[in-house]
Length: 308
Image 1 (tube, one colour):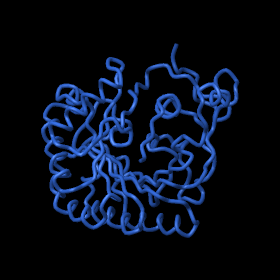
Image 2 (cartoon, rainbow, N blue to C red; image 1 turned 135 degrees about the vertical axis):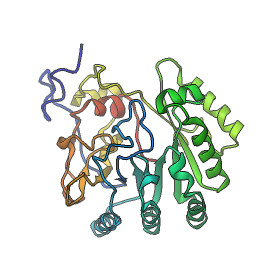
Image 3 (cartoon, rainbow, N blue to C red; image 1 turned 30 degrees about the vertical axis):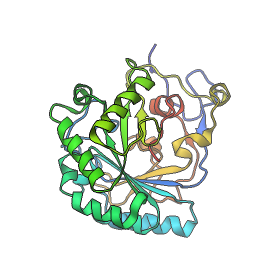
Image 4 (cartoon, one colour; image 1 turned 60 degrees about the vertical axis):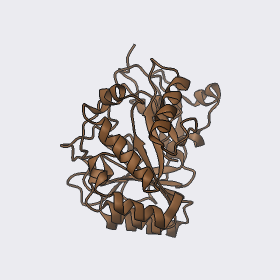
């Protein structure tokens, strides 16, 4: 069994059933991809970030200002602005971007590996934490609670810099959460217990039993067979479309060579042009067909969400 022939028609599955879609319920989370350049190359990175991948370029502050103005004018219930990458702290203007988002009155969530690109901003982040308190959260990617497990994904030499960053952020008073990965080899309770022990050892103010403070993302293998999601699946799975990320979030990106931003339906799918919703938030309010393996594996079956 494979995914051959699946995820082709936005309206029908391979077997001819009606494909599930997600209606837009209002913009509550705006994701900003700061760019796909990263200081490391991780196994299984959702968007193939690396020191050489610049398919998404640095997101301009003026684009964020325009998005915030558009959301405000439209009366969107925008509560949260998330920054992802690549590694956001490689962006040369990341601090003005964060302050702009925080000055707008929204919560801000930054996804980071907490390595050397972040370390040079520790003083400035302490100032932001003092100015804005718990409205600023940094979610640090730590793929396993052991050095061997983490470095199997992130590469040799990535463990100690990440722990240094975590400890320094905690000392600076920055609100923290962690992001790890579920594995088929360990039950969730065991994984959370491992992270809890690590947090105690490092004196991190993170409750590993809390599903927001310790986020566990499902394993993503694009070669593994994934079922297509039909409208009948909602009832069978006991879920509803409005629980999916794309019901209330959009991501804005700048593609290399483009003269304008693009709004995309999902943080995981910036390259698939089927999920490009145009150049404005106003034009990106349509329903999203669940026409990609990530829709099924990550969101519907995995129950994962990137936002807080």
